[in-house]
View (cartoon, one colour):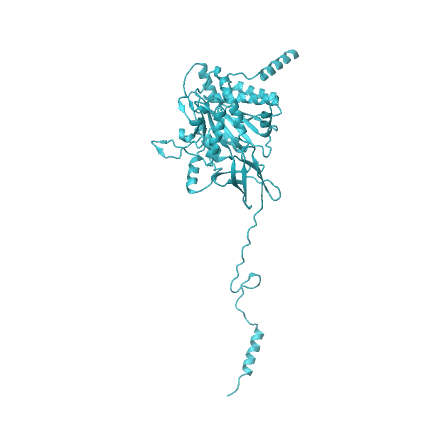
Length: 462
């Protein structure tokens, strides 16, 4: 009996540690692959679930960090999200390959990967829509063609049209004045979104993500916000029009980093479309409301772009290796982009961390905030900036910072508590001691009697 148990455990272990092959992974295969990577690199990985799909499947995340499960102050958080549309599967497979690659190269002491893992907290969600994937995969098995089969979740909802619409508020605020970051959610937002969307929203609110990419299929282009056009509707649709964020130049650079590190995205001509440099503003391509990348930018500190990675939404298994080789360097370079701009701690005079302090950059109408540990991260291109930190009941502090092309500049703030001005005391025309208003002066009775007697003695008889 013990021999049978031993053989079973050996077979199970072999199944867990078998190398990732270039094939499509159904849900059970995906879960085994994530735990296999964790078993190979237990000290720098962690598998956790952010919630469940409509059908009850876990939304598993694989984390890479030298201290898994712990936020280290001044170490940025970055994420990849794949398979948001269940039938767009290449991102799912690429993220599994990336997970295996990071683990293997870390074990081989590849200094670039070691530096990345030890200096960054990386979160990989291979499938945001596991229910939709199973529908799409089953259709492939039965050789059923259909451009949209499996795209939506089990409730038939497109998850990339399911986030609270914050663009309407930001466009109003840009015109009329109002907050330019961390726009609030409606009170009943949980009743308006799907379980997968709610899980992702709670996830990105719980961690201070700085950078993100959402992997899709159906085109080959790096798409950056805004996704929703500012133009008015025409016959029920919003006209396509370039709708840049205040960080437009930075977003273009992030998109170009991926495009030019990719095997062919930067060439522009792909899938019958042409995108100069292989990048596009989302709204100038087509207007999309309630999307995830705009939500990240408007509700959190996270800068997210959308990566369209293949003409075929469900590429054949034989194409996966070529796609991996075309995307591998781009996936690594994009992660490295989180290490630019400025970062630092915001504290008070007693070195207590200040949470939710606002970091403003003059000339860029989009602020970020410090996280739960008092640290902040502000992605910026090389240049000289005027940066201000503010917090309620503290005096603001402003500094001039020159940002280079290399590692982020460390800029700490120590705010002094505001001293409210003393309210001036108002004194009336008849104010007396201790602020009491006294009546007109009244002579004592004895004094009045003495005065009357003196007047009478001064009278001379006629």
